[in-house]
Amino acid sequence: MKRRMIAVLLSGILLCSAAGCGKEAVTDKNTAASSSQEVTETPAAEESPEASSSSADSTAESASASTSSESSGDEGKEADKKRIEITVPHKDGMEALYDTVDGLNVEKGSYIAVVAKDLSAGFWKAVKAGAQQALDDLNASLGYTGNDKVYMTFEGPENESDTNSQINIIDSVISENPDALILGIIDQQSGQAQMEEASDSQIPVIIADSGIESDLITSTCATDHAAAAKLAADHLCEAIGNSGEVAIVAHQYNTESSVERVEAFKKEIEEKYTDVKVVQVNYGDGEESIADMLKNTLETYPALKGIFCTNEDMADQTLDALADMENTEQIQIVGFDSGEKQQKAIQEGREYGTVTQNPYGLGYAAIVAAVRAIQGLPVDQKIDTGYQWLDKDTIDLETNQKYLYN
Image (tube, rainbow, N blue to C red; front, top):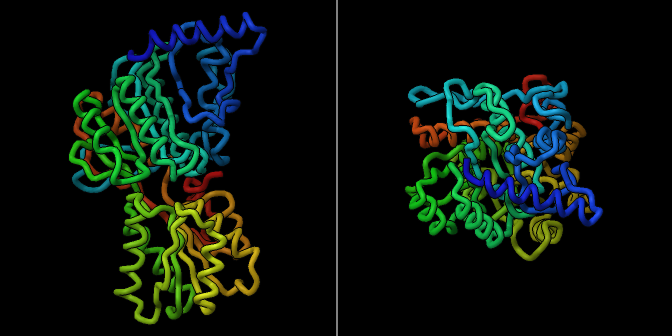
């Protein structure tokens, strides 16, 4: 119910402004891609029927063929759409299932704020698609339509190194007093004050992917970063014949997911592969480009045999950099995540394989956890959303399509 009066007033002002100035009001969220804020399923009494049913357009833009989408039309009507296949592992002792909205019941117009790490990343677009599907399922199960729908805003900086912008966005959404807050934190050392403010306002906080050290968090929905990175180490060592020098290209120095993946990868090598040595770790949030860092790495270690990339962006940049260099065909690349460029590189043999997360499931699970918290139901402190190894022999299997995104 929060923000409804503001939404109604703003909607009316925008529509009147558009009519008075001869400008067309924006109803398609995709036309506002440059903005750091996007409102999804926001109730507004003055919205046109087309605007009220177009809330899933932006998720469809980033999703693969298996994602859901809605086309504009009269409220209550939906175009034919293919649902995303949602799976979230359920372990013994867990309080709930996180790939279903069965049994959930919250107030009409409940508002969930999501702050991601990087709105431009395919991974976060897929997280958003999964989150939107959870909201669609929830509203359908409760019979909520129009102004009654449970809705979310999905905001964040335009790149994953902009910590200051993200903190400002978190401050802004907390001031709007959402019913629950979902966060993917860029810098694990930041955000303590925001956690305290959310706690003081009785706003449950769900971490998605990367968090901070705080006992004020209700739940964390994430990949088991350490286990996934160990799997990546095993496959990279396999690719180089269990012998030789390897490097790491990590997305950030102080993001929880990056730290855990780097440390687990190194530990796995040290403990299991005595003839393999990690010679250098490069970080993508510095001033030097990935291409320049890799050039320097190869000048220092010309016999380098493998590279582990800790996320989609680092894998993409590494693939581009090596393509522009000579005598790099022998270098085996193992990535993390499963964006379009990585999919193609794996199919063509330029990337040995990748450990992909489950972004659609992560987004869905985060919404379920948030709704359970709003409802006062038990929520598991840790929700492992799973991961999967993909290579040229498995990437095209039907069972693995739920891990892929564009």
